[in-house]
Image (tube, rainbow, N blue to C red; front, top):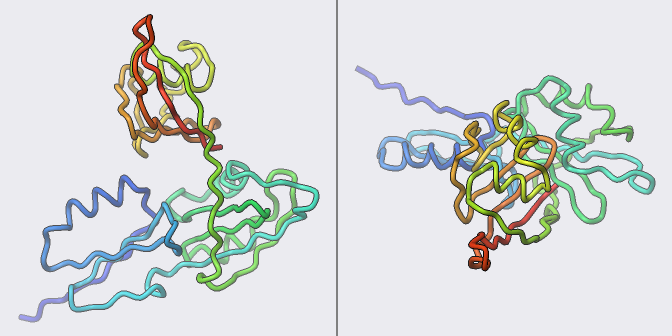
Length: 234
């Protein structure tokens, strides 16, 4: 009886999903796992599962890199603007990888090859800026800018609703609907519990507000509140 060894290529996975895959497959001697998002800096990657005797090259991940041309002298494109424009085309988030922006105004995006034609045809504007997509070699990816800003705050507890209220300067009452409607993720997993307890190192994203990361607890205040340092990324 001949055993058929299959090759599987996933869509783009976020870091949490990648870690789950590595945990599940890591001890399987009959499966080799490779991953790539098109650059060493990629956050979202495609995973390729093969028998251990097969090699995997970059071309096997079926990635397309687009250079996004727009009137950069007159318009600035933000990451959230580009993400919104792509999502408005009806694409699922797992069909495209990282959106790359640098300090010089260069914008790129990495997509699954099977949707490249659709994206090229339909993405015609980002915000108010007209755009044109040009396919370029995957090796020409830019180094994305690090647009994290560092801030400090105090909080009475490490509850999700309490921390979000302090980070975004909102009342807990205004934060609650974002959590209840599934618009908040912690470490790329949707969390709908206001009392979820956060830890140092956790990544938090709130739709419409960007991402944040709890970097450190720097002690307690005289009123027994946590003194927190965190980063924010729009």
